Image (cartoon, rainbow, N blue to C red):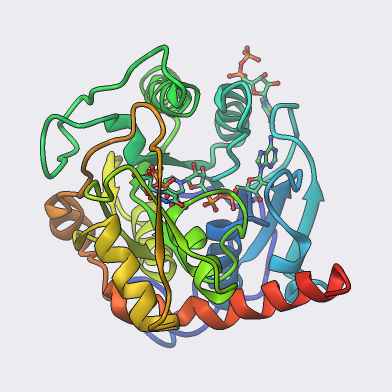
Length: 331
Ligand code: NAD
Ligand code: UDP
Ligand code: UDP
């Protein structure tokens, strides 16, 4: 069901998806927008590792070359510095669209990637977000829930941008017959996560390593469900390769208050770590937890790494990067 633009004559051996060992599968050419970012770079590692050709499109807005530098020189890897808000012509089989221009919305980038998918007949996967549910009135959240989003709030640019991206994706599917997939990603953490974008896991881990108090916003009783990045990448690939459009929630149903998260970080990194309360941001969702029964049933996917096992896996990466930063400052 994918068209051959890769002109590759080299078959891939081994176990890939449902193809049994010894039977060859054609190498695919796959675009990953935002592939120099946190999630994207782990996805690229997996796709290259199974033998496919990957083109990363990234403008390094929040991504870093360091995340993919180990692939430079690999003939199956290509990196294009490009803003997806501008059109681009490529010949590919699949598009994983992760690039998310923060401002004003990600709508233009999504439109261009859908236009590309339509032109070349590629399958298109959108990384949407649990934020489409807003401050949810249903708990846990099922894919059938339409959400509770403030259209004029501080976070609505991101939320509404992703909701519009989902709408465009479904319109291209219905109107132009593009093969599409939609993932709604819940809070994800792991190595290569941005150090300074203010997410709670990266903040707490960096603060504990730097011997600073962990900043708990509000009363710390709001909840989130934290997914380790390798589980997400497995889910994204299962979704892309499967027969179902979605949307699918991809997240770990283990639910924690921010105070509980702080405890886990404390146990993992520094038993003497302290917390400090700060005012919360406006429209902060009170609770969030995915109902993943749909992905379990139709994608045969569920997360494997609980928080207490996943957190230690990002600590070394964070320690090294914080050390390098400090050395860079002459500290
Ligand atoms: P990230 O910021 O690490 O990665 C995004 C990448 O896109 C970066 O490398 C950035 O440089 C690139 N980019 C941004 N604007 C671009 C543009 N206009 N043109 C080209 N490249 C551009 O973020 P991430 O956590 O890896 O998120 C990846 C995707 O998953 C995003 O679409 C995000 O909305 C979605 N998501 C992530 C989470 C999470 O918890 N990490 C949760 C929900 C949804
Ligand atoms: N586009 C792109 N690469 C392609 C095909 C399209 O970047 O290979 C862009 C194109 O410039 C347009 C958008 O995708 O801005 C939507 O394309 P589509 O063909 O659906 O819309 P149209 O050009 O007909 O308005
Ligand atoms: N948060 C916090 N301390 C921080 C950063 C965030 O207590 O240093 C809280 C934030 O108020 C929110 C939760 O952690 O309730 C998750 O925030 P994050 O930005 O990581 O993800 P999102 O709100 O997008 O789910």
